[in-house]
Length: 640
Image 1 (cartoon, rainbow, N blue to C red):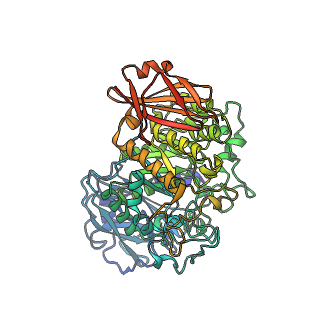
Image 2 (image 1 turned 120 degrees about the vertical axis):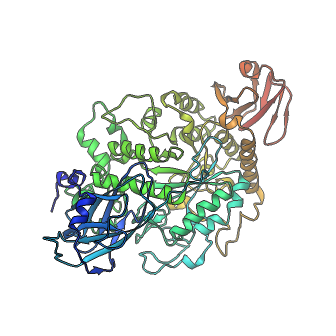
Image 3 (image 1 turned 90 degrees about the vertical axis):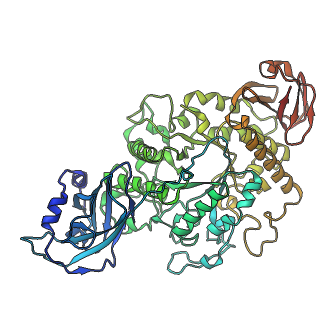
């Protein structure tokens, strides 16, 4: 079976049912039946949204044969709900679904409205029983502290909820789920971490100097295998019950804000899990991309803007599945696009979260990305948004953020920033070998001219898909500190992967090895890094904490200008400066001590006579001749 896009797009036609006609066609009497088995997405909505249109996806056995014949506060005979009217009603290919488009006027009042579904009445008589569904329109939250967004002053701590800490053992076993039990000795099983476990350690984040928490996706991933990572969504409107409930997530965000911590929600636009309820019972065949046989993406974003590229390569990148268990959502279908847009508006308004990290950002339909970004930003201009654009060049990465390029193939990104893989790769290249190449880091930052505002990018050292930073740099503590120094003093909003601060290590072969449990987060752990951090793990934590907290109290490292000097003789030097403050970052990336002629930096050091290295307290008395030890980075507050 196949339904054409023309039929699906007919939902947006102007064959609207006005409040008057809805009232006159409503039957004089109805036998209401309970709404058992009825599901409507979004699960509730708000009055006063900037876009007055609301698309309801109604699911119930045989609902496609019915119509929404009235919206009322009490019964089909009563006057319509004030401020809400039916724009159009449209069945889709699957008879178990119905699309209802409503208009919610700006002067509508919060309350519960009754939706009355029936077959089309003829002559005022009802052909079958009425299905009644109570739908809530809520008042919007006006708290100015909600949805704060992110700035360069923030420091993001990224973690995997299942692997961080178990705060509520009661949700370790959730009957009815496809992977109901915890098995900490199994790499791809659930380990039991949850929202309560994260909240229990708000003080840890603050001690470290973090200001924002980014958990990998928290929405339901009811998959039979590897459901712990969160990137195979099975219900867009539900927190995974093994992490907590929707109400607990709302409280989590509220409590984080009360502790001075922001919350970034990790989201997936491009694909869902193969056990998603809308994939198991699809509204229509064209809600997902399909090929004659299973076809993966070619994972090559260059196809999107290659002036010599083939349509076939373009189609494979955008429409191929990301994995065998991750069906590719067809965002060019306007019904699907609206479903997704409303879902991510819903999460912001429901919780007050502060930012979205968008997984696999380039893989989504380019036109949809522009539509999605515009809708989210218009409703929540303060919301931070940055996307995963795992690309190989500065230009290709910049293509997926707000940039100076003209539109390419009709695409012009409106995403404020991206995860800065170019900075990450260049730091790793500089540090993973002896006398590593510093020029790549210099070039990555020089490429900032491609962006409208590169300070909205998020630099990092590693993540859940990459080998851990400490292992990549050969477990060299000097190199570790150099990477941390760069991360916390360069432009942008830095992100740290959980455990990096205590030297967790391993290579992503397979990826489960870099997603191990945080020591101390689970009952029976022999080591508890939340309570104490002996040895070099403690030194690492203290170094990160000292520099991160210094960054908090010295805005020059977050809002100051950046000036870099071309690396010379294995030494890279740059400055963060304002009209009143100046910090010099100088790193010797060789295995030998280096003497550096400080007169080269006179345009930034003139007027200053000395400095203090902020992590050690060491005094730098002479700025004209600097002797920097091997594999050492100094962060120097200049003094007059």
